[in-house]
Length: 525
Ligand SMILES: Nc1ncnc2c1ncn2[C@@H]1O[C@H](COP(=O)(O)OP(=O)(O)OP(=O)(O)O)[C@@H](O)[C@H]1O
Image 1: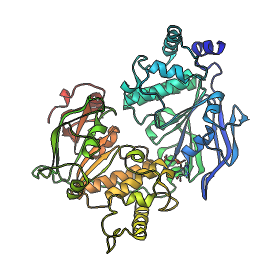
Image 2 (image 1 turned 90 degrees about the vertical axis):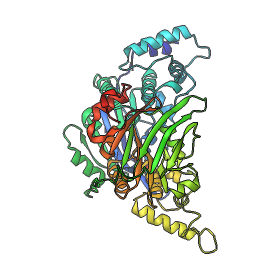
Image 3 (image 1 turned 45 degrees about the vertical axis):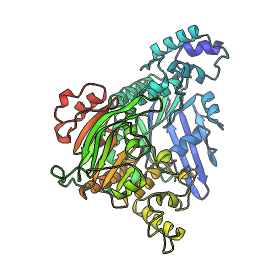
Image 4 (image 1 turned 30 degrees about the vertical axis):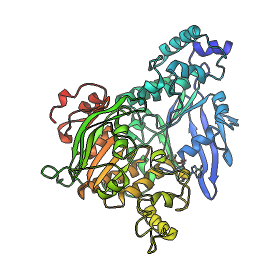
């Protein structure tokens, strides 16, 4: 009871703690994912953990949280070694983590989610008293989330804020955040990071954040550590270290691939390669999530759709990839009726990268080679003369793609689920971009990728456009939409705003529309 009262009264009564790892090593079979990693996060600091895809960042924080048992090495809190063998023990020690996937219960309200997360949640909840405690907690918090709203009805950014609030409500004193801003609008991201930084500097919490965004690291973090191939390659002050120096620590002296130039497109006169003619789609409850969207995409252009996640973009991509039924309207490819099934996808050479590829684009328990063959397993060269699939040829094709797209995997036979998030993404892109592509539909193609891969993937998308493919790019990353697109529109509450030339608009205008303002001021169609 006393504990419950404490929770409702002062934030993190114990205050910030320092977090260290000493010589932490973790192997997965022959792979050394962490090699004697020593990390030092001062109490009350905001520390960034950087590194390319597969560098070992998630493995390190999972060892700290007790998800993985390290082979050797130690974790220290406030200088004292602690043995943490499960996330629950980490929580009891005051270390909480916000994962890339959500851990909230969608059908419960924000308030209910906070209360049930408490390890001392009472069997019978006295809602009036709980409610007062929650209100008092919220009043002290730097950002708010509507307590009575069901999590399912919160925006992705609000859900992420609630995940962070949950840790603060549980009095966690060290917060580990895995790319926390990827689902937030730029304004939300700045707000949350600024406020967490404030709490850290007042000595209330310590923050360790995995990030791929240099802008955030420079603007909000005090210090950083870089991992490369499982080893620490550098650390220091985020203010005093240049982005160039940080990137050298991340990728070595290798030169970054140059950005593919934008060649002049063939849009305009040509017939659209893909037409969305007033298409609508509903969610499982019958709610309209895509509402009369009309759009033409021409050969040689990238049309970018920006928007905060949860505004119908994923449903739109699902319709185009045949994963969701069309409720109304029609699709045309090269002016002909088009049904997004395998025959038409092949006929019109439509390829794509959906969101969350680990869930939507691969079979996690199949090998990299098998996953890479999904689009070609019934065609030459994978199928030989007698119509039989040749595992050797499938493997050879996969080996080629692995090399070309620099997919880090122990071999083509490794199960996809053992690859780091960024490398799953690369494997899917390798499969989808390697053929003859006429229409390319990509959703958040660089989500979770390190910056070298981001440059690479964006260059590949641009190359497809330059070759004459019609590209639909759906992305929550506004900078990405503006960098790549020829024309852009914002999707909000299932509707598509005006489609305008990318060079006739800017980050602020689109950002305002994403935040729910009308598109009138953007002008044009
Ligand atoms: N459960 C596992 N079994 C086998 N290998 C694994 C497992 N988890 C991670 N790995 C491997 O360990 C290495 C480090 O992966 P980790 O997920 O820590 O990288 P990361 O830096 O978090 O990458 P990303 O930015 O892509 O998420 C990778 O080569 C990955 O394939």
